[in-house]
Image (tube, rainbow, N blue to C red; front, side):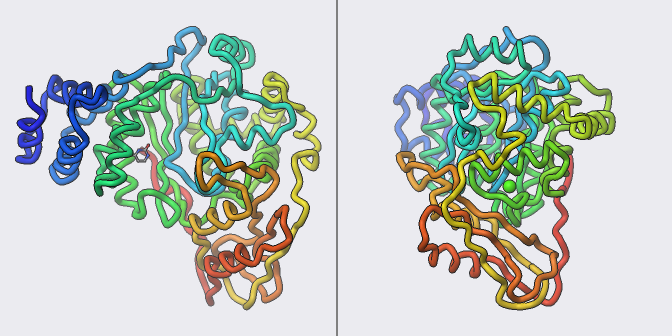
Length: 431
Ligand code: URA
Ligand code: CA
């Protein structure tokens, strides 16, 4: 087989066979196919698309390019959740204990954040003593005992995707549905769960700016999952404004605790119930999404979800007292209120720009080496559709330095006030 023939085949709109796709990905991973040929292939795929079968084959070829995690020693149906990325997205911190409290094993491999705000591990590390440096054996033991554990990224998973994603980034081939869908799904499948729930974001703060694109991506990923034997569902959710009120590591832990207590932001709670219902349903702990949702609400009301969060924190060395005393989480030295300049209704909160404002305070990493400040971030006081009067607080800045002029400027530039505006619909669809 020669790469050039396969590039021409795809260029002319023909379907590649399983063997051809395996050959391309294997050879590219070991360096036998150069970047310039892979770039040409990616561009051909960008314009010619891939069939459902090709997409599944590409996904599995990338899974098989590296190590995979074996979770078969964990009892029960393991369900993983993936979000296509958002600002102030606190769902994992809520969902892990909430869903686990219904007996669904949560075996979460998670990363640190880059850009915007921290990842789930950064957030959890704002709890004194909490650590994720555990062995794979300890991880499996913890999940079997407590039905929940989080471990840092281990192993060389999907090296083909790492290489191809970096190449796509500089060749104008990122925004291709078959390439995005196979990239995301290969990582989830390599991580070993039996079923996958996807939160596909749409809006200004998301990868997929329009609802139509988000739906197409969600459908593509669900089909790949189901075609390779992993039950998969998706929620299409709004990311035109940040989720919930808090953006920043310790601030989001507190927001998660509030939500597990039933006092969280309405949008965060609604999305957690939608995603959580799919997780519980796919884990076969409920016969329908409605039944699953009712069980989740009960777990919040009864305190079962919060009790699971305490148990989880303690099992990984953390101090569970923060659940009842969130003021013991890292606190920033300064809290600075940013007042509205006019009367009206909040019409826009540009999610990614507000995320960058939080990053400027130190809540996120500009580069992989940057040190993160767990205490800092932003707490919104208003969401789109809320009325506001001049002088009322729009946002509270939590900062460890006094000079936040740049952050204030960014906030004013990205929170718009108009005569009227409606709150956006949070959930755009279920796939
Ligand atoms: N995220 C991924 O992991 N892969 C893509 O291709 C796009 C977004
Ligand atoms: Ca939030």
